[in-house]
Length: 316
Ligand SMILES: NC(=O)c1ccc[n+]([C@@H]2O[C@H](COP(=O)([O-])OP(=O)(O)OC[C@H]3O[C@@H](n4cnc5c(N)ncnc54)[C@H](OP(=O)(O)O)[C@@H]3O)[C@@H](O)[C@H]2O)c1
Image 1 (cartoon, rainbow, N blue to C red):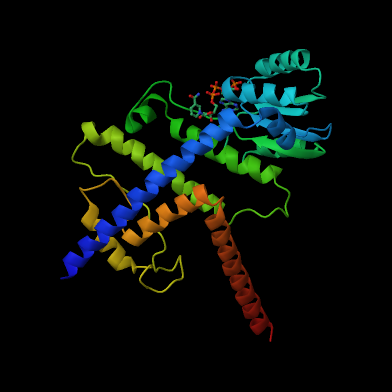
Image 2: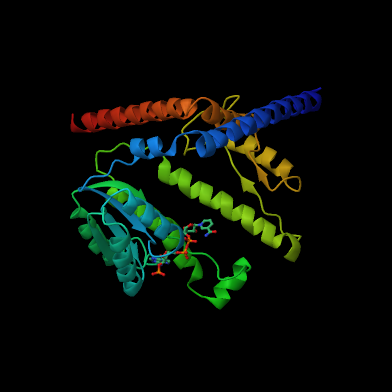
């Protein structure tokens, strides 16, 4: 009877998921048409890009490609620009060209910086001091990125370029964390668990890529990206319930999925929760995210109150 019920649960879950995906796809397509073809772009720019002499835009990796295109657009809107890249000569040329093309851009400062340096590098402190000189920051474009010269296997690339992995993490992740920390005013609230969830999506993405790489090279190696919702452990500080499985039962179910899928939420309610989350975000303007954020805030306040209480008890 139990396996039958389990199968019934799966079929219902997947039926709902497929229905949700179709609605999601339709909603996204309509939104795409509105954003790119129907709305008045000039009104849109006026609404969102109100530059002034003092409101700066910071762009990393600003001398080429996408970063350069951002610099040109923002110069056109009249923002003062703080451009960061690795090569001084390219920075100077970019500055000169932007000044000539966009006289409405009031000021351009350039800063040479190699983002392959790690989080603790002293040069980040120099960058921080230079950014502190700016009266106010309106826009931060975390654009800088490092990629492969050519498609290459994960283990092979360390042999070709020994520092490759350290450098790609520093450029693609550390730079984003560090620049965001530098630019955010200290009192500005951030959605909670942001660094945690960012690192987890990074691992998910990495696992999916490496899975594809190894599929043909080493078909015997099984790689899975496991995406749990809440599981009752020390980290979540939750007790087991219908939606929060115990670690043991979660792992048992996870083991059942090996060989069937390389990316799984394992628990069908976690999968449903994720699909519901995505759908509600598409259809109801971040409605669910806001509720989740409020809940996280409450959890945080509860934790702080408890901590405060413990401190008080110790003093007594
Ligand atoms: N192009 C694509 O198809 C594509 C697709 C998906 C995502 N992206 C992402 O979009 C972003 C921009 O890509 P893009 O194609 O515009 O790149 P790009 O044309 O190669 O330009 C890279 C820019 O970053 C600077 N840069 C590179 N390494 C740096 C480092 N270690 N420290 C400081 N500055 C550095 C470069 O300046 P210097 O030359 O002076 O070093 C240059 O200004 C990246 O995050 C990339 O991962 C791109």
